[in-house]
Image (cartoon, rainbow, N blue to C red; front, side):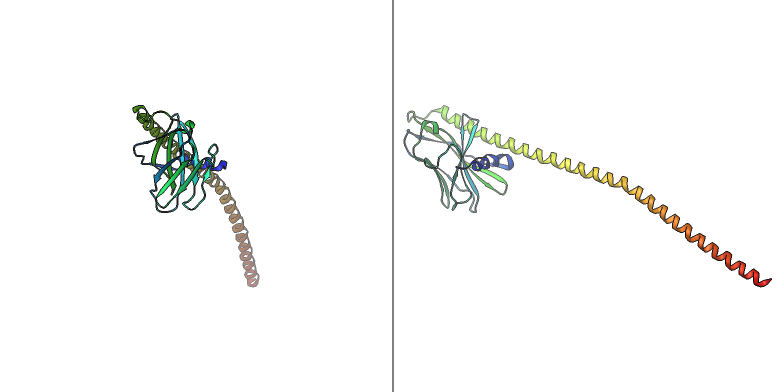
Length: 225
């Protein structure tokens, strides 16, 4: 298990645009100790980052596993041992196998894909461990509510990221304006210095020409006398 896999999967929602196409939640029932395999269809034919998330009590979201490609080895987040959880992928489907389920494994499971700066959720499945085999309306309602919570959470985080980018852009523009104003204040002083130098140079040249003219006049006058 590696810590960065958990941060990677959870930060995908906050650093990317969100595209959600979650179908109606499916309920998977199992008894403690049984093996369960969850699956979702691939929506991209090219290489993407694929991950599984789990939501418990409507708001507690955690990373389960991450794969950078169909041929890569899955990495598991803290709390989800590779011995009991196994993520795999084929050309058309992504799997999450739980070898021996426990009551604590109950919850809403989401399969997601990250590509081109966008997070896509396709399937959500509610795993119910223990209890009888009769379906209950409250379970279906809970699945829909948890599905809505994760979508809303990702959308809010995405909006906050856009706002942060806008603030940073505004600060950058303001900083450039201040730098431009400082340069404009320094340029008039440099221009005045250059003009003063030119005047002094012109004065020296003018005085030199005047002396030469006076000298020529004196020479002509002396010759006449």
